[in-house]
Amino acid sequence: MNKRQEYHRLRGFGWKPAQAWRAAETMVQFERAEDAGLVRLLVEPEHESYFDVYGEPDGYVDQYGRRHSAEDERREIIELIESEGCWYVASEVLCPCCHQWTIVEGVGMIIADLPQDPARNVYAPELMRSALDELIRNGNAPAWLEPEEV
Image 1 (spheres, rainbow, N blue to C red):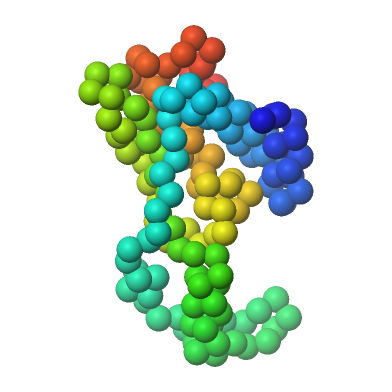
Image 2: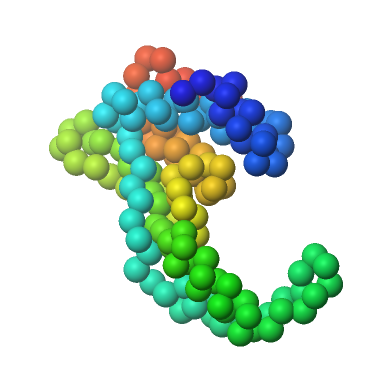
């Protein structure tokens, strides 16, 4: 993975320059740590109902001023979930002591066709960063992985 290519790809999806650069850098580091077998993203179908978590829709007014009923909005959400899926995505690190995968951080109710792709799931870079930071905290980080500068 090339950081500049990822940066330009994320910019193409409307990301701001600083956010895209930070995400691209995280993605490159994560891929390298993933190739070393130290981190991974877990992607599973969401088990909870979207409507149990968020409640029933109220309807909305779109950018053209057109009113959409609650029934229309519910139907749109169902169609989106059926076409792209509703996912739970978590970052995991391999424990150096017991060699078991441990969840660092997770986010549910992600509606996306590629929920691990930051271009489709804005939480993915932060999940990746959390796993990298955990490697640093637990002392299992490779020499090339530096703590993130804020």
